[in-house]
Amino acid sequence: MGAFKTRGGADWTPSYLTDINPATCIGCGRCFKVCPQNVMALYGVDADSNILGIVTDDDDDDFDGELNRKIMKVEREQDCIGCSACAKVCPKDCQTHVPVDQLGG
Image 1 (tube, rainbow, N blue to C red):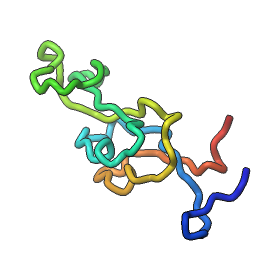
Image 2 (image 1 turned 30 degrees about the vertical axis):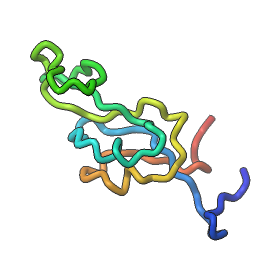
Image 3 (image 1 turned 45 degrees about the vertical axis):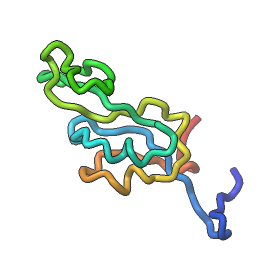
């Protein structure tokens, strides 16, 4: 694998988002807002920690009263460019990033 460089020529290693811990994610959306590739999606969760589905723009969507909280999930990992902007804004440090040279497959 070739070396990665910044525009200025400095060495740089992309670190790709691989997971978001649903137990610690608070669904604040900061990571979603800074992601240039729409890698994540906001999901609703019920009181038993079951994923209800993607939360839509409709603020009234409470999944028939089952919505307990919201979390972010990795939705399109193949679109991640490894910028780690999401990790820089996450207040709960609930994301896992893996450097390009440590990714399997």
